[in-house]
Amino acid sequence: MNGRLDHRNPLVFDTHELGRRPGALQRLTRSVDAPADFGVAGVIGVPEGAPVEIELRLESVMEGVLVTGTSRATAEGECVRCLEPLRQEAVADFQEMFSYPDADDRGRPKAEPGDDAEDDEDTLFLEDGLFDLEPVLRDAVVLALPMQPVCREDCAGLCSECGTGLNDDPDHHHDAVDIRWAALQGLAETIQDGEKDNMSGAEANAGVDEKQEK
Image (cartoon, rainbow, N blue to C red; front, side, top):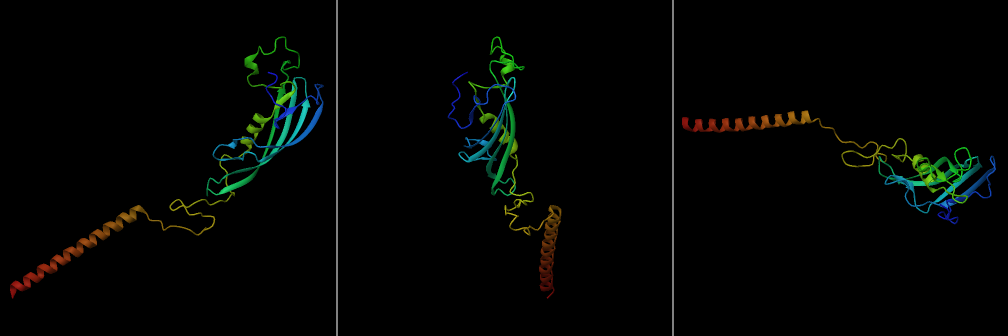
């Protein structure tokens, strides 16, 4: 387990200064570059390399280190209504326990560390006094971001018929045509055309009759 975390990684934190005395506290602030895929894929997220401000509170407890914090960054995405680009502040709060690998849930030394594989599956551990904040931070940011971001609460979106942006043209509209009335109108025009044809035929026949009478 030891040696897998790199203390030079800005999202890896060292707890040696905190110590293992229960109740000890340490506060940290750090600005890091956002890792890749930091958000909701294809919807909204913090661009890779963008600054992420982190405030942490580390508390030593019997079984490990309780990490409580807040991150702030600017997320970018696309409005789901009008499809215009948007930017908004992403504030994520989180709390996570990083357990000592050599202690059980009551802080007592384990006789044989690592035997309880099933119990350890969802537990995050300190590795040689280090912990990696990235998975915790990533989950917190994803939960803090909207699944359907909008540029503003009253965004009118796009015209469903022609795609015109309704925010810039609120009076935009199309004359609604009821398909039933359209059908009746078409029927009426057909009847009128038939009547005209009948009248023309009648006039022609009348002309022939007049010639015969003469």
